[in-house]
Amino acid sequence: MHSLPLLSLCMIVKNEEAMLPRCLKSVSGLVDEIIIVDTGSTDSTREIGKKFNARVFDCAWDDNFSNARNFSLAQASGEWILVLDADEVLVFESRDQVKKLLSDPGVEGYFIRIVNLLGALREFETSEDFVVRLFRNKPEYRFTGAIHEQVRLSISHHAGENFLKRAPLTIYHDGYLSELIQKKSKVKRNTSVIIKALREQPGNPFLLYSLGCEYFVSDCFKEALSLFRQALSALSVREGYMPDLIIKMGLCLYKLGELSEMDLLITRYKDLYPLAPEQSFLSGLTKLDMGKLSEAEKDINECMMHLSFGSPHHLGIKKHQVYQVLGEINEAKHSWDKAVKFYFLALQSQPNYLYPLHKLINIYKNHHPRVRLEDFLGFCPPDTKYRLLTKLDWEIDDEAVIYLILGLIRDIMISDLNIAQLFIPRFLEILNDKQIALKNLRTAATAALAKAAVTLACYKAVEVGNTSEICKKLMDNIKDILLWKDENKP
Image (cartoon, rainbow, N blue to C red; front, side, top):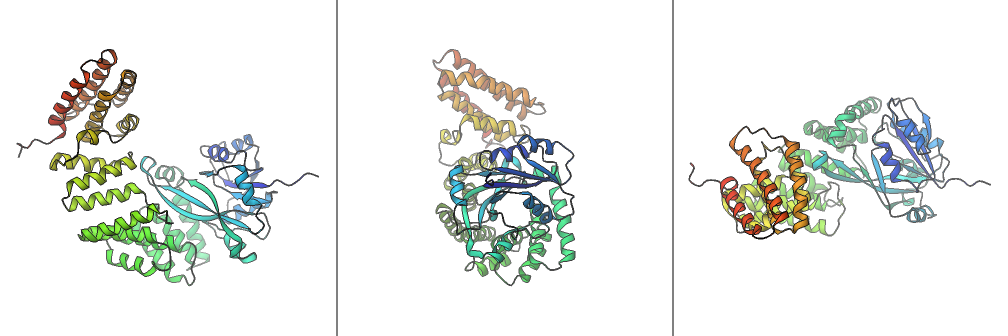
């Protein structure tokens, strides 16, 4: 007798040819069956699914995600169901790890940590949530809600909340990166679905919260705040999305300058929910804006302590953000050396985030902190500097470009022969790619400095000798001419 598949992957898709292969590869060797429900693709989504041996079904789109999701569940024959979207990937240790989770007789479903990538692709931030995405295949377990659909409610209703546990798995979701939102008109689609659902269920707090989230990711903070307020006032019980609602509402208040109300909101709910990192972080930002620098520093240090001990949080606060705020606090206190220290730590923690780099350059130009230039220029490996040079606009971000080229000159200076040889094609590639229009003296000097770096690399590649001394002198001269301001100018 043929046994049932252990684990079925269930997906609903539409025009996901770019994202679907990555998602399916992430569960290769884990799932025993793939169910793909297509709601009207006009690209090669269906064909890609079949290449991965998926069973592909058609389902007419009716502006209701739960209906499509439940149709996919009805096709599955596995004992357990895993639900993913095409713009998600699952991270797990091994198939044995997952099979062990599925063998627990005391569990009907698992919450899985969802890490949402937000913002711009090159400088994204994250937010986190826990959602039931892995559960037993039973006909009574079905999704509800036209959008941001959930299966937890039906499992809790039939089995009880105690039969839901957390799994040590992670799903990464990048569908809210700004480039992908723009490409797929995701917010417009979601907003339309939620508004339609609200006409049928006016005042539904989860729908109000969901609509607020769509405005939030679009930076429409005033509209999002109004919806979050309505959702909060309509809630009579503690829901799983309450902490996220409170934090997003607090962020809206912060963005809109309503600092006192934000502080009251976070303080009111701090004893009910694990908001420690967010509360400290937002409180620190508020105190910084109010000029209460010592109190701000205390709050941000407390936030760092909670992050260090791994407290759960919903904002996805990263250490480079905390270091940046500590830099801003010390800059406001005119503690230049400490400001440089924290901006430097922020830059090391996230080299692709350029704000601390601009802050560092400004402090070095105007306040001459007591930090060695050698340390300043060596904040990251050469490959990171190359990547940043290709990302920057050389005419607008000329100071940052000069700093990065100086950093690469420093790397040439301390490198061996083989490494020096690798610099040459990389620099030439950047110069050819940029095709810099020499519109002013500053831009021309930037390009000349890059070409000088190539010359130095070429020189060192054939003769080690006294290259280090030449590099040092050139670095000092360029620093004086281009990076540090002229004290004699008015």
